Length: 346
Ligand code: NAD
Ligand code: UFG
Image (cartoon, rainbow, N blue to C red; front, side, top):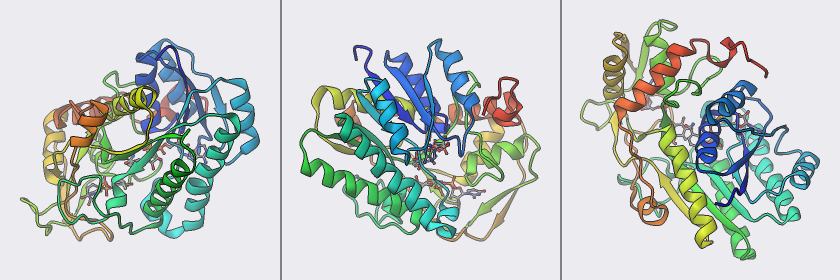
């Protein structure tokens, strides 16, 4: 990759920070941008410590065109990986305009600035949420899209904007990655997911119960058409996911052309299977209570992973034992997330 320079937006976030480490390990140079609305500067200090490499940081919003123009004038960016966005489904229902502004208008602003700067390689964080409640599993990329909330709609709108952009100008090389359920943490325990307030997602909640910070996991629904009645998802280790981005970039620089690819493992696990796996690695008992379904949830979701293998020569390698063990190591080493660190800077 000849020391190519990658701008990572949302670099201080959960997936962004892990991807920075993998990019640096693969020999890329990284410039980070984040407005820290859902993250800490500390994450990037730890990325630098882990990789032994400097990561220039721009404290900026992707909707700030002037800041982006300055950044693109300062660094000879070869490609942009765009993680910056808001991701809480429930919050998006309450504040849809905020989500469209941050996610859709933010992406639009970034793409306009890239065009002005003559940068045309763009890798975008989409989500399996664009498939809604799938007709069949595993879900192939050509499955129907049917979003059910503003967060999902913001992702689909951006995907459609990107498709139009590629049709309009052959210079653009755009990869769309649809993530399934990222979990786990870097094996060092130095970086991981640091949710603010009550976690929305299953694994952070389970790990806080295991740590004694919360009393009990509410299992949303035991009447789904799954082997034990609880919801089934395609959990993917965040380090595998990060490496998927490195593979996608390699493909973009080597062959050009656009693609939309699922990043998952192709295997589904139920809520209770995840809970038991977490108990096994942590040695803690995790109390749970079966409660009603969470509104908007689907029963079963897992990826068809063949296109990722064929196009990107990538597949996930880490199993649920590694996902839970690494999540637990991060939780145990950082019981208060990044805010417990003496290096805390943001
Ligand atoms: P995260 O919240 O940890 O990271 C997002 C980062 O973007 C944060 O550091 C936040 O401060 C920053 N950010 C948000 N809006 C910004 C703005 N306007 N300008 C600059 N920075 C901004 O989330 P994550 O889990 O790392 O997710 C990264 C991306 O992947 C998001 O786009 C998300 O929608 C997508 N995604 C996540 C999941 C998941 O379950 N984690 C699943 C599918 C897709
Ligand atoms: N669950 C519980 N209790 C909890 C949290 C979750 O039982 O406290 C269950 C859910 O009902 C679901 C499973 O655990 O069956 C996973 O739930 P998550 O909230 O962790 O993940 P989702 O699949 O609901 O959603 C995630 C992201 C979305 C993204 C979607 C698809 O949060 O943003 O994956 O990528 F759109």
